[in-house]
Length: 419
Image (cartoon, rainbow, N blue to C red; front, side, top):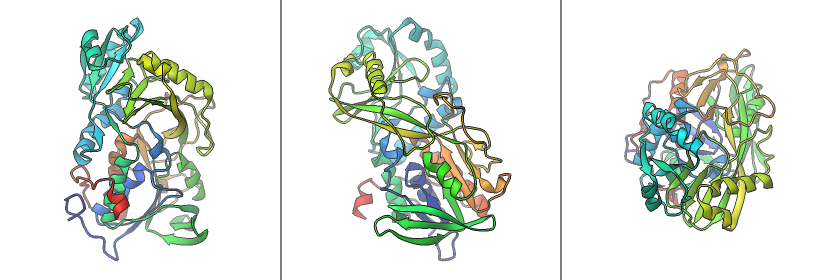
């Protein structure tokens, strides 16, 4: 039996070996999925597990409501994965629900479009009148007109993904943090593994693999370049601010299309507000602009007035791995065609889809065999991204191995530290 209680195909010495680059949520979920399918898995991460974007987001388990009018595919997938994650990660979420709050007449005029889109995307939503909303959340702006309740939730940005890592390792995956990929080893146009540097000992060595999957998030473009291929990943940073004190108990959103400073989220005895969006070339070169912190606090204060007067505990930025062009099958894990590159300079990133894509670089104009990239998506959709990518890996290897991750209850996050 696999960790978590589901049958697992034990990896045999001759089982195909998949090497995953990237120790964020997607890489961990993919390692978990592939081990359940009986493959040998090695995962390398240049830092600590979850030390990139995964450990830096605000911790929102999306209901899908945020994207119902702007990115229907992402909204539908978030709605479905929200339910699955609550089932396989029991105890990891504060199931506090969310409110989309109308403050202005413009917000109120958005209601009809929003509710219709929620219904079309299977996102449960119901209108809450002003007095009832204030009873549910006394800290809301008393001038609100009404609110709409949706099944958002709060999660710990690191602990939920650690459950995937812990379960994968228990089932045989080889996890190697502080192991940086410095080169991709190739024979002609076929990838046969990677050369890595152990950052603790500064020792370099090679790891062979039947397939290498690039799951490096906003760093996916840098990793792909090592194999001489390109992927249209547009790193899009956003600023988040932690406020001292728990100023609300539900996730509070502004009732309008996604914009800066329109989410207020409780995290234990803090309140996290955010976020902003811009594009960068290098996800290692992020700023936390003071003017964005000021704007986020100001806009969030329109939803929960106490935010504007509270002490700031911390501010940080994290880069989203958004897809910046065409060239892959979206949300399915199927192989892609030619990768496009780049995004127009100065693009704020709001218009880019939150969907995910899996690229099989054997389909590029200059085919590169044995190398795949998965990018995009949300923390809420990490399991679905892993399922689609694992499907593509198995198909490429000529294996018929069904996914079982939607039923396997994961080990607790503490198992990562106790194993």
